[in-house]
Image (cartoon, rainbow, N blue to C red; front, side, top):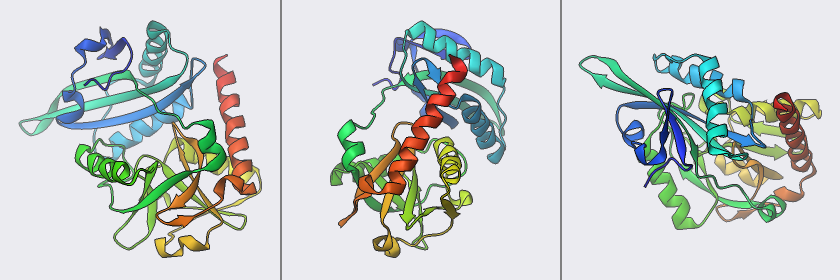
Length: 279
């Protein structure tokens, strides 16, 4: 099964047909990646995503060998050759260790099969579970197939949308493929940036919250205190701002929470403003 979804992808700067896609770029060596969303032909928050990719490389002492301008041009070319206006694009830089240094480098840019929440899920919220586990290096977006598979299995078994990760001290960190925000009164709480992947959506949501006059607290929050909250939501490339209606057996009316509703509207406005840059 190919992770590459559309007819064409780009590998090391060359356009290739999806049948030529090699999954080794994900499974062998060390792979850094980034996923961004395309809406109406515009790659959202493109410069921020490329900067985070560069930050991930710095954290694990690696270097990108392709310029920001080249990555941007190839993403626009990918959109054009596939004639796609909406979807998710993945950028992967792969480093294969040979002898005592990384000497065989490959990169690929391609469309993923996306799964966006339905209208009803935004209106009602989605169920989640707590998952006691930590990613090895939360600040860097490095592919870890084993951890991803273990969490996915639990998500599927419990028939939920997402798993909220809890570290060994019992503090909520992030979602398995998202960031988590919690509402206590008019305070918006999220984990300290050093404990999570600093998501691009997360960054823009924090800006939106501050522009709306909400206090954003980046702090440790113990999972035993979840019942004190008035609501929670998921943030990410695909879900954007998605209310949570259940954490394990605890129910929340997050979709009705006025703070969350205003953040959803504010983030949608930020998206439209970013799209205008390309139009």
